[in-house]
Length: 96
Image (cartoon, rainbow, N blue to C red):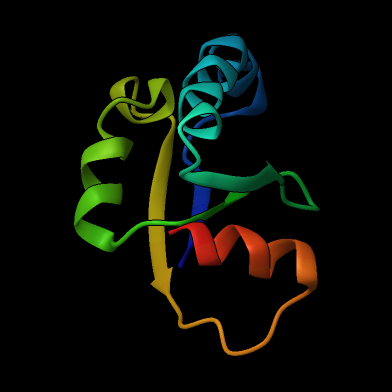
């Protein structure tokens, strides 16, 4: 599993200009089961995505993000191994 941290490089006005496209991008990977959760950080200097894939696949996925294409954000990937989780997440992990 991955924690994908987005760090905004541009002012929020520029982030907002690409937000609808970014959310469409997110929906593609929610629909295929890769993304589990996402949202903005507080304070709003970036965002976080929780994903079910390895770093190589995520590197390819990121290239499709309008925030990457338009140089809006940098990305930090942190891979971790789930040892304990709630039942809802456990049932998702068993499918993969």
